[in-house]
Length: 463
Ligand code: NAD
Image 1 (cartoon, rainbow, N blue to C red):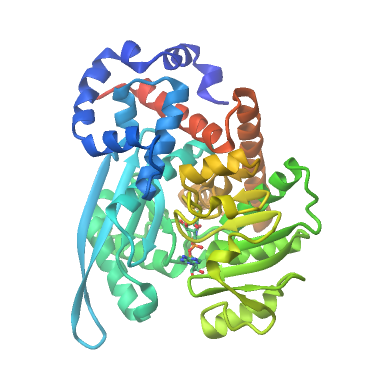
Image 2: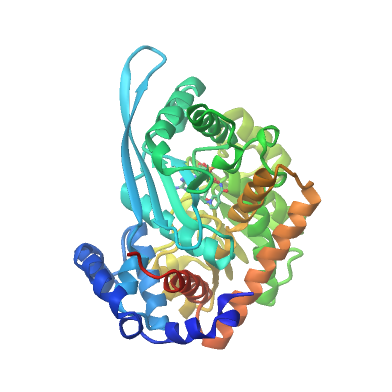
C-alpha cells in the first residue's frame, strides 16, 4: 500500500507547493538553489534547446515531473541534488610493473527511502556528471518499484577490455578501499553495470569483508550464487525488459508472436533480452555492440551468435547474418526497439528516422527529451528505463533480503516475484498515464518523485 492511501495529511500537503507547506525546509533549502546555478540555468534552457548530456536529460525529466506535482523550488533543489559525492584517485600497478591512474566516483543521489543502491560502471567515458545522472535515475527506479532504497551509482574511468583480470582485481580492490567509508549493507550497496560483472562484485565483497573483519554478503548484489548471490539475478534485468516489452506490444495492439525486434547492445542486458524475446515468439532481426551490428530478416540464431561472440568478442563477422551499420539498427522497420547499451543514442538528430512502434529502454537514459517529443508526436510508445530495466534492482533487493536472512529462494520463486512486481508497476504506470494524460515516462517519473518527496516530508528536515 502506498503512503497516498495511508497518510492523507501528507498527500494533502504534497498537492500544494512545498514552499507554502514547508516554510522552514524551503528557507533552509533555498541555499541549495544558490549552489546549483548551472543546474538551474540548464533546467530553464531545457525547454528551448535539447539537453546534450545525460545529466541534462535527467534534470529535464525531473523538472517536468516537478511541474506536474507543483512542488516549490526548495524541494526541487533537494530532489535534483546528490546527497553525497566522492571522487577518488585509483592508481594501478600494471602487470608489467608500470603505474597508471584512473578516477573513481561514487554518487549517492538520495537516501530518504533507504540505503543507496546502484551499479558500478567501468568505462573510459565515465564522468562525474554521468554518474550523477545514473544515480538520480536509480532513485526514481527504486521508488517506482517500491524497493526500500535510495539511488546511487559508481564509476571508474577504465576500459576493462584493455586490462588483465589481475589488473581489474587490483583496480576494483583499490576503488573499493577508497569508497569504503560511504558503502555498506545499510549505507550503499553496489551492483554490476556496464563493464563490471559478478566477478567484480566478489572482489568488492571480499575487500569490504577483509576490512571490517567478517564476511558481509549484503555489501553488494549481483554476486556469484556460491557467495550468496540470488538465483535469477544475472538475467533479471533482461527478464524484466522482456516482461515489459511483451506487455507493451500487446498494449499497442501488436501480436507478440512474429513481432520483429532490434536490440542495441549485446552485453548482460541486450544478449539475454534478445534470447528471452526470441523464446517468447518475437523475431529478433538485428543486434549490435560497440563494434558493429548484424541483421537477418528471418531472425538471428542466438546459440550460434553467442558462440561467435564468445570466440571473437564481437557480433560482426557472424556468418549467420548480414553486416549492418550500428546506427542504422536504430532506424530499422521493426515493431520493437530495445536500446540496451548507453545513454543518449535516440536524440533530436535521429528520432524522426526511428520507426519502431514500441521502444523499451533496456539501457539507462537512451532517449533524450527532444527525441521523446518526436516519438510522442509520431504515436510511438516509449517505455522508460526506470520501469523497463528495473528487473535488476528488484532481484538485487531480493538478493539483499535473502542475504540478510541467510535464507535462499529457488529460481522459480525469484522469477515469479520478479514478474509480479514488474507487471504491477507496468499497470500502475499505464493507468496513471491514462488518468493524467501523461507519457509513460512522465507518469513513471511523477509517481517516483512523489514517493521520494513524501519520504522527505514525513522524515522532516534535520536539524
Ligand atoms: P555490458 O557492459 O554488459 O554490455 C554493454 C553492451 O553495449 C556491450 O555489448 C557493448 O559492446 C555495447 N555498446 C557499448 N556502446 C555501444 C554503442 N555505442 N552502440 C552499440 N552498442 C554499444 O553492460 P550492461 O550491463 O548490459 O548494461 C547495458 C545498459 O543497461 C547500461 O545502460 C546499463 O546502465 C543498463 N542497465 C544494466 C543493468 C544490469 O543489471 N546490468 C540494470 C539496469 C540497467
